Length: 240
Ligand code: SF4
Image 1 (tube, protein in one colour):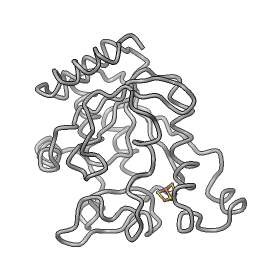
Image 2 (cartoon, helix red, strand yellow):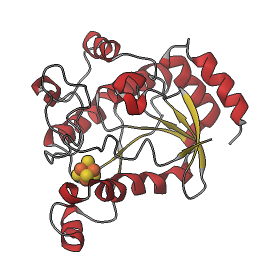
Image 3 (cartoon, protein in one colour):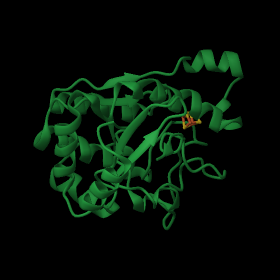
Image 4 (spheres, protein in one colour):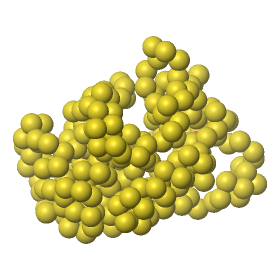
């Protein structure tokens, strides 16, 4: 890592007043091929990808963690994004297919042990990818809920296996309204499930993603009825 923790802190404070395009440009200039966008193709990821591809560099790599439990609408959206920008989205896969997982751990592990399921299907594939990267761009926003309210634009992190990298959240300070204004005004493709009560979309089992009622928080449909709030992708690495 070419920056000290103190330099990162200072830059993060400076970036609070900067547009996502400038933050992404800084990331591309400083990390070259060792920075990538990680996206599950929610609204924020679509905005980050659009800004990156149109205004920064169409060569910024994009990857997604394909749990094997994507909604068909998500699969279709990823194909549309690839066509729109002429890119190939890298799919990271868990070690086991959903069928192999069911055979080894029993059916519907996501209902019984969602943390274990998320760890195997999301966290481990990301942890294995990270040593290739010095910078990881995400669409995290502070206003997505309590578990994300402390998100910084830049955060130095270390995985449990000792790899240090910079997490870059160019939309940390954006509101949900700003994200949707961008999507609508730039006529971006988005997941049609958002028009059917799903503000946040993860895996298809209903215990993992359900539509929300009027007045519920935007992540209330994720692991509803349990204490689980995060899959672990944003929490497994330690902040430095
Ligand atoms: S969101 Fe649900 S199905 Fe997807 S990895 Fe986590 S527990 Fe498994």
